Image (cartoon, rainbow, N blue to C red):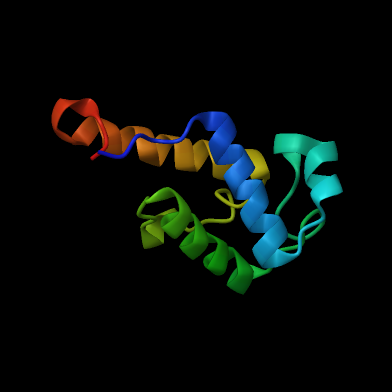
Length: 102
């Protein structure tokens, strides 16, 4: 049985991915917090890197990101990504027997 990470753990995990895999400035992520822009100014991810981030999120958090969910709005800020992962895990937990992730 797999227990979904707590929201703070999700945010820390997304930060770790951004720093280790995309070279994001940890100080920038800390200074701006969840409002840190991921595309363009801010972290500066391009569209290919956003897709790579989606793949990393799927692997790290055991979520499935559908093609229609891959939008600019999803990758707008650190907070939008964290909220999305939290929602996907919550939805997955609610759809499994007993309402828990397995």
